[in-house]
Amino acid sequence: MSASALRRQLEELLQLILRERELAKSLDIEALGALQTEKEALLGALGEAVQGESAPELKELAARVREENRRNAYLFWSALGFIRSTMEFLGLQATPPGYGARGSSPRPSGGGLILSGRV
Image (tube, rainbow, N blue to C red; front, side, top):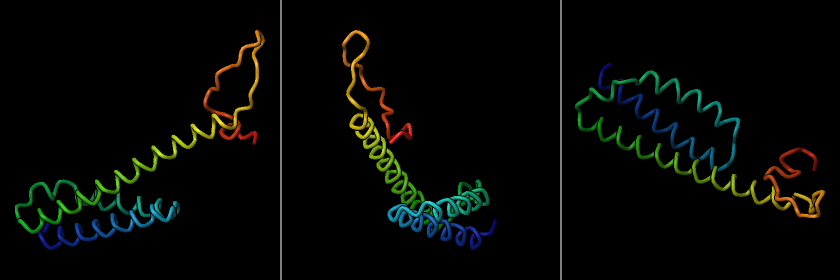
């Protein structure tokens, strides 16, 4: 792969990653899905071409792509943790109080009415 083609693909990937972050912030799930398909195709086309490249400007661009992608990964990881803790909290809140056959209060299983679809 020529250096100019590699540079063009890296710049395109960088733009996709930046757009991915904006779509994640706006919670546009459909557009994120379409972008993911486009990103996977571009990553497949890049393959190992970046590893064998020795031009400093391309290495710098690849490092920026890597850093922006890590930022997105951290954003997604943080969002996932927030969603998990929120669902756990809601599951505990939505579980109606009750007593077992022996008069003891059973511990909630974490699903609750919201996750089961009975609300």
